[in-house]
Amino acid sequence: MGAEQGGVMETAVIGAGFVGRAWAITFARAGHAVRLYDPEAAALAKALAFIRDVLPDLAANDLLNGATPDAVMARIGAFTDLPGALAGVGYVQENTPEKVEVKRAVFAALDREAPAGAVLASSTSALLPSTFLEDVPGRSRCLVCHPINPPYLVPAVEVCPSPWTSPETIASAVSFLRGCGQAPLVMKREIDGFIMNRLQGALLEEAFRLVADGVADIEDIDVGLRDGLGLRWSFMGPFETIDLNAPGGVRDYADRYQGVYAGIFPSVQRRVDWAGPVMDRIEKDRRDRLPTDKLADRQVWRDRRLMALLAHRRKAAKDIGP
Image 1 (tube, rainbow, N blue to C red):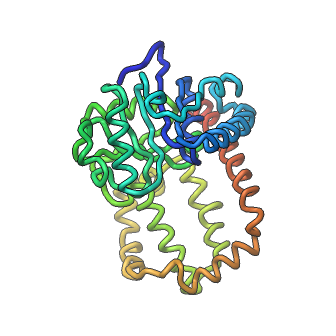
Image 2: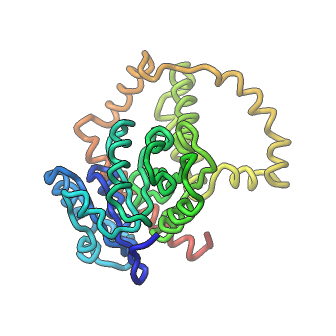
Protein backbone atom coordinates (compact mmCIF):
# COMPACT_ATOMS: atom_id res chain seq x y z
CA MET A 1 0.00 0.00 0.00
CA GLY A 2 1.74 3.12 -1.20
CA ALA A 3 1.34 6.90 -1.01
CA GLU A 4 2.68 6.99 2.54
CA GLN A 5 5.30 9.41 3.79
CA GLY A 6 6.47 9.55 7.39
CA GLY A 7 3.50 7.47 8.53
CA VAL A 8 0.99 9.80 6.82
CA MET A 9 -1.25 8.14 4.24
CA GLU A 10 -3.07 9.93 1.46
CA THR A 11 -6.62 8.57 1.72
CA ALA A 12 -9.83 9.07 -0.21
CA VAL A 13 -13.34 8.88 1.23
CA ILE A 14 -15.93 8.41 -1.51
CA GLY A 15 -19.34 9.77 -0.52
CA ALA A 16 -19.88 12.52 2.07
CA GLY A 17 -22.97 11.18 3.84
CA PHE A 18 -23.26 10.00 7.45
CA VAL A 19 -20.72 7.19 7.07
CA GLY A 20 -18.32 9.04 4.78
CA ARG A 21 -18.00 12.06 7.04
CA ALA A 22 -17.41 9.74 10.00
CA TRP A 23 -14.58 7.95 8.18
CA ALA A 24 -13.07 11.32 7.28
CA ILE A 25 -12.85 12.19 10.98
CA THR A 26 -11.39 8.76 11.78
CA PHE A 27 -8.62 8.96 9.19
CA ALA A 28 -7.79 12.63 9.79
CA ARG A 29 -7.66 12.12 13.57
CA ALA A 30 -5.08 9.38 12.96
CA GLY A 31 -2.90 11.91 11.13
CA HIS A 32 -3.74 10.96 7.55
CA ALA A 33 -4.55 13.35 4.74
CA VAL A 34 -8.17 12.85 3.66
CA ARG A 35 -9.69 13.65 0.28
CA LEU A 36 -13.43 13.72 0.86
CA TYR A 37 -15.24 13.23 -2.44
CA ASP A 38 -18.84 13.78 -3.40
CA PRO A 39 -20.24 14.90 -6.77
CA GLU A 40 -22.60 17.27 -4.92
CA ALA A 41 -20.92 20.39 -3.52
CA ALA A 42 -23.82 20.88 -1.10
CA ALA A 43 -23.24 17.41 0.40
CA LEU A 44 -19.57 18.23 0.91
CA ALA A 45 -20.41 21.53 2.60
CA LYS A 46 -22.85 19.81 4.93
CA ALA A 47 -20.32 17.11 5.80
CA LEU A 48 -17.56 19.62 6.51
CA ALA A 49 -19.90 21.66 8.71
CA PHE A 50 -20.77 18.53 10.70
CA ILE A 51 -17.11 17.61 11.10
CA ARG A 52 -16.23 21.12 12.22
CA ASP A 53 -19.01 21.01 14.83
CA VAL A 54 -18.15 17.60 16.29
CA LEU A 55 -14.37 18.01 16.58
CA PRO A 56 -14.48 20.24 19.71
CA ASP A 57 -16.53 17.58 21.56
CA LEU A 58 -13.96 14.96 20.58
CA ALA A 59 -11.14 17.24 21.76
CA ALA A 60 -12.91 17.82 25.08
CA ASN A 61 -12.90 14.04 25.63
CA ASP A 62 -9.24 13.71 24.56
CA LEU A 63 -10.26 11.75 21.47
CA LEU A 64 -8.18 13.60 18.87
CA ASN A 65 -4.86 11.95 19.72
CA GLY A 66 -3.52 15.22 21.08
CA ALA A 67 -4.32 17.25 17.96
CA THR A 68 -6.43 20.38 17.93
CA PRO A 69 -9.75 20.53 16.04
CA ASP A 70 -8.19 23.00 13.60
CA ALA A 71 -5.27 20.67 12.92
CA VAL A 72 -7.58 17.73 12.22
CA MET A 73 -9.84 19.88 10.05
CA ALA A 74 -6.85 21.02 8.02
CA ARG A 75 -6.14 17.41 7.01
CA ILE A 76 -9.49 17.12 5.19
CA GLY A 77 -9.89 18.41 1.66
CA ALA A 78 -13.10 18.50 -0.38
CA PHE A 79 -13.30 17.21 -3.96
CA THR A 80 -16.09 17.05 -6.53
CA ASP A 81 -13.91 15.41 -9.21
CA LEU A 82 -13.09 11.73 -8.73
CA PRO A 83 -9.67 11.66 -10.47
CA GLY A 84 -8.50 14.53 -8.28
CA ALA A 85 -9.73 12.82 -5.14
CA LEU A 86 -7.91 9.59 -6.01
CA ALA A 87 -4.61 10.99 -7.26
CA GLY A 88 -1.75 9.49 -5.27
CA VAL A 89 -3.87 7.84 -2.56
CA GLY A 90 -2.98 4.59 -0.81
CA TYR A 91 -6.34 3.72 0.73
CA VAL A 92 -9.89 4.35 -0.52
CA GLN A 93 -13.09 3.99 1.54
CA GLU A 94 -16.31 3.90 -0.52
CA ASN A 95 -19.66 4.97 1.00
CA THR A 96 -22.23 5.08 -1.80
CA PRO A 97 -25.87 3.86 -1.78
CA GLU A 98 -26.58 0.20 -0.96
CA LYS A 99 -27.44 -0.81 -4.52
CA VAL A 100 -25.51 -3.47 -6.40
CA GLU A 101 -25.57 -1.58 -9.70
CA VAL A 102 -24.22 1.56 -8.00
CA LYS A 103 -21.42 -0.34 -6.29
CA ARG A 104 -20.46 -2.06 -9.55
CA ALA A 105 -20.17 1.25 -11.37
CA VAL A 106 -18.34 2.97 -8.53
CA PHE A 107 -15.76 0.20 -8.07
CA ALA A 108 -15.13 0.04 -11.80
CA ALA A 109 -14.33 3.77 -11.67
CA LEU A 110 -12.24 3.45 -8.50
CA ASP A 111 -10.22 0.60 -9.98
CA ARG A 112 -9.67 2.60 -13.14
CA GLU A 113 -8.65 5.87 -11.47
CA ALA A 114 -6.92 4.91 -8.21
CA PRO A 115 -3.17 4.15 -8.08
CA ALA A 116 -2.36 0.48 -8.64
CA GLY A 117 -1.16 -0.05 -5.06
CA ALA A 118 -4.21 1.44 -3.35
CA VAL A 119 -6.59 -0.70 -1.30
CA LEU A 120 -10.24 -0.21 -2.32
CA ALA A 121 -12.64 -0.79 0.59
CA SER A 122 -16.43 -0.61 0.72
CA SER A 123 -18.46 0.41 3.76
CA THR A 124 -21.45 -1.67 2.66
CA SER A 125 -23.43 -3.18 5.51
CA ALA A 126 -25.70 -5.42 3.46
CA LEU A 127 -24.14 -6.38 0.11
CA LEU A 128 -21.74 -9.26 -0.24
CA PRO A 129 -18.55 -8.15 -1.99
CA SER A 130 -18.88 -10.92 -4.59
CA THR A 131 -22.10 -9.30 -5.86
CA PHE A 132 -20.37 -6.16 -7.09
CA LEU A 133 -16.66 -7.00 -7.50
CA GLU A 134 -16.69 -9.96 -9.91
CA ASP A 135 -16.11 -7.89 -13.05
CA VAL A 136 -13.61 -5.43 -11.54
CA PRO A 137 -10.20 -6.05 -13.17
CA GLY A 138 -8.38 -5.22 -9.94
CA ARG A 139 -10.75 -7.17 -7.72
CA SER A 140 -7.85 -8.69 -5.78
CA ARG A 141 -7.29 -5.31 -4.10
CA CYS A 142 -10.95 -4.83 -3.18
CA LEU A 143 -12.82 -5.85 -0.02
CA VAL A 144 -15.44 -4.72 2.48
CA CYS A 145 -14.46 -2.76 5.58
CA HIS A 146 -17.83 -2.18 7.22
CA PRO A 147 -17.82 0.18 10.22
CA ILE A 148 -20.13 0.29 13.19
CA ASN A 149 -21.21 3.90 12.77
CA PRO A 150 -19.73 6.27 13.73
CA PRO A 151 -16.26 4.70 13.45
CA TYR A 152 -14.59 7.59 15.27
CA LEU A 153 -16.52 6.49 18.38
CA VAL A 154 -17.06 2.74 17.78
CA PRO A 155 -13.77 1.15 16.70
CA ALA A 156 -15.01 -2.26 15.47
CA VAL A 157 -14.74 -2.72 11.68
CA GLU A 158 -15.81 -5.86 9.82
CA VAL A 159 -13.17 -6.81 7.26
CA CYS A 160 -14.81 -9.12 4.74
CA PRO A 161 -12.94 -10.41 1.68
CA SER A 162 -14.52 -11.40 -1.59
CA PRO A 163 -13.52 -14.75 -3.11
CA TRP A 164 -10.87 -12.85 -5.10
CA THR A 165 -9.39 -10.58 -2.41
CA SER A 166 -5.68 -11.21 -1.98
CA PRO A 167 -4.17 -11.98 1.45
CA GLU A 168 -1.91 -8.95 0.96
CA THR A 169 -4.93 -6.69 0.56
CA ILE A 170 -6.50 -8.00 3.76
CA ALA A 171 -3.23 -7.55 5.66
CA SER A 172 -2.78 -4.00 4.33
CA ALA A 173 -6.34 -2.99 5.21
CA VAL A 174 -6.10 -4.47 8.71
CA SER A 175 -2.76 -2.76 9.34
CA PHE A 176 -4.08 0.60 8.15
CA LEU A 177 -7.26 0.36 10.22
CA ARG A 178 -5.41 -0.66 13.37
CA GLY A 179 -3.09 2.27 12.83
CA CYS A 180 -6.17 4.49 12.84
CA GLY A 181 -7.20 3.10 16.24
CA GLN A 182 -9.87 0.78 14.83
CA ALA A 183 -10.50 -2.84 15.91
CA PRO A 184 -10.83 -5.03 12.79
CA LEU A 185 -12.92 -8.22 12.82
CA VAL A 186 -11.26 -10.27 10.10
CA MET A 187 -13.67 -12.66 8.40
CA LYS A 188 -12.40 -15.78 6.66
CA ARG A 189 -15.17 -15.66 4.04
CA GLU A 190 -18.27 -13.68 3.14
CA ILE A 191 -21.70 -14.50 4.57
CA ASP A 192 -25.03 -12.64 4.53
CA GLY A 193 -25.13 -10.07 7.31
CA PHE A 194 -21.40 -10.36 8.00
CA ILE A 195 -20.81 -10.78 11.77
CA MET A 196 -22.38 -7.80 13.49
CA ASN A 197 -25.77 -7.87 11.78
CA ARG A 198 -26.06 -11.60 12.42
CA LEU A 199 -25.35 -11.15 16.13
CA GLN A 200 -27.53 -8.06 16.43
CA GLY A 201 -30.26 -9.71 14.39
CA ALA A 202 -30.39 -12.71 16.72
CA LEU A 203 -30.81 -10.39 19.68
CA LEU A 204 -33.46 -8.26 17.96
CA GLU A 205 -35.42 -11.34 16.88
CA GLU A 206 -35.67 -12.44 20.52
CA ALA A 207 -36.49 -8.91 21.71
CA PHE A 208 -39.41 -8.66 19.26
CA ARG A 209 -40.63 -12.13 20.29
CA LEU A 210 -40.57 -11.26 23.99
CA VAL A 211 -42.64 -8.12 23.40
CA ALA A 212 -45.05 -9.80 20.97
CA ASP A 213 -45.62 -12.69 23.40
CA GLY A 214 -46.34 -10.33 26.28
CA VAL A 215 -43.33 -11.42 28.31
CA ALA A 216 -41.90 -7.93 28.84
CA ASP A 217 -42.24 -4.32 27.77
CA ILE A 218 -39.58 -2.72 25.59
CA GLU A 219 -38.10 -0.72 28.47
CA ASP A 220 -37.55 -3.87 30.52
CA ILE A 221 -35.64 -5.40 27.62
CA ASP A 222 -33.61 -2.22 27.15
CA VAL A 223 -32.82 -2.24 30.88
CA GLY A 224 -31.63 -5.83 30.64
CA LEU A 225 -29.15 -4.95 27.92
CA ARG A 226 -28.22 -1.46 29.09
CA ASP A 227 -27.81 -2.21 32.79
CA GLY A 228 -27.01 -5.92 32.53
CA LEU A 229 -25.32 -7.67 29.64
CA GLY A 230 -24.19 -4.45 28.00
CA LEU A 231 -22.02 -3.44 30.94
CA ARG A 232 -19.82 -6.49 30.49
CA TRP A 233 -20.08 -6.44 26.71
CA SER A 234 -18.70 -2.90 26.62
CA PHE A 235 -15.23 -4.27 27.41
CA MET A 236 -15.33 -8.02 26.70
CA GLY A 237 -17.16 -10.31 24.31
CA PRO A 238 -19.48 -13.28 24.88
CA PHE A 239 -16.77 -15.95 24.75
CA GLU A 240 -14.62 -14.19 27.34
CA THR A 241 -17.76 -13.56 29.39
CA ILE A 242 -18.62 -17.25 29.68
CA ASP A 243 -14.97 -18.18 30.15
CA LEU A 244 -14.96 -16.01 33.30
CA ASN A 245 -18.43 -17.08 34.47
CA ALA A 246 -17.58 -20.66 35.47
CA PRO A 247 -14.83 -21.82 37.82
CA GLY A 248 -13.21 -24.02 35.19
CA GLY A 249 -13.60 -21.66 32.23
CA VAL A 250 -15.42 -21.95 28.94
CA ARG A 251 -15.70 -25.75 28.82
CA ASP A 252 -17.00 -25.81 32.40
CA TYR A 253 -19.61 -23.18 31.45
CA ALA A 254 -20.78 -25.30 28.51
CA ASP A 255 -21.01 -28.40 30.69
CA ARG A 256 -23.07 -26.53 33.28
CA TYR A 257 -25.40 -24.44 31.12
CA GLN A 258 -25.67 -25.90 27.62
CA GLY A 259 -28.76 -27.83 28.68
CA VAL A 260 -30.49 -24.60 29.70
CA TYR A 261 -29.89 -23.04 26.30
CA ALA A 262 -30.77 -26.25 24.48
CA GLY A 263 -34.13 -26.15 26.27
CA ILE A 264 -34.71 -22.55 25.15
CA PHE A 265 -33.68 -23.16 21.53
CA PRO A 266 -36.93 -24.69 20.18
CA SER A 267 -38.90 -21.64 21.31
CA VAL A 268 -36.74 -19.26 19.29
CA GLN A 269 -37.38 -20.97 15.95
CA ARG A 270 -40.30 -18.67 15.18
CA ARG A 271 -40.21 -15.20 13.66
CA VAL A 272 -42.35 -12.25 14.66
CA ASP A 273 -43.05 -9.77 11.85
CA TRP A 274 -41.27 -6.61 12.98
CA ALA A 275 -43.70 -4.47 10.97
CA GLY A 276 -46.76 -6.39 12.24
CA PRO A 277 -49.04 -5.62 15.20
CA VAL A 278 -46.14 -5.65 17.67
CA MET A 279 -44.72 -2.52 16.01
CA ASP A 280 -47.76 -0.49 17.06
CA ARG A 281 -46.94 -1.27 20.70
CA ILE A 282 -43.19 -0.72 20.31
CA GLU A 283 -43.54 2.53 18.41
CA LYS A 284 -46.08 3.93 20.91
CA ASP A 285 -43.84 3.07 23.85
CA ARG A 286 -40.83 4.66 22.18
CA ARG A 287 -42.68 7.81 21.12
CA ASP A 288 -44.14 8.16 24.62
CA ARG A 289 -40.59 8.14 25.92
CA LEU A 290 -39.07 10.16 23.07
CA PRO A 291 -41.17 12.29 20.69
CA THR A 292 -40.11 12.20 17.07
CA ASP A 293 -38.97 15.83 17.14
CA LYS A 294 -36.48 14.95 19.91
CA LEU A 295 -34.76 12.13 18.01
CA ALA A 296 -31.95 14.33 16.68
CA ASP A 297 -31.23 15.74 20.15
CA ARG A 298 -31.11 12.24 21.60
CA GLN A 299 -28.70 11.16 18.86
CA VAL A 300 -26.35 13.95 19.95
CA TRP A 301 -26.76 12.73 23.56
CA ARG A 302 -25.94 9.18 22.41
CA ASP A 303 -22.76 10.29 20.67
CA ARG A 304 -21.61 12.32 23.68
CA ARG A 305 -22.21 9.32 25.92
CA LEU A 306 -20.18 7.21 23.48
CA MET A 307 -17.38 9.79 23.63
CA ALA A 308 -17.35 9.63 27.42
CA LEU A 309 -17.43 5.83 27.36
CA LEU A 310 -14.59 5.64 24.83
CA ALA A 311 -12.51 8.07 26.88
CA HIS A 312 -13.13 5.92 29.97
CA ARG A 313 -12.21 2.73 28.12
CA ARG A 314 -8.92 4.23 26.97
CA LYS A 315 -8.09 5.41 30.49
CA ALA A 316 -9.07 2.07 31.99
CA ALA A 317 -6.90 0.22 29.46
CA LYS A 318 -3.92 2.29 30.60
CA ASP A 319 -4.67 2.07 34.32
CA ILE A 320 -5.98 -1.52 34.56
CA GLY A 321 -4.85 -3.19 31.35
CA PRO A 322 -6.54 -4.02 28.04
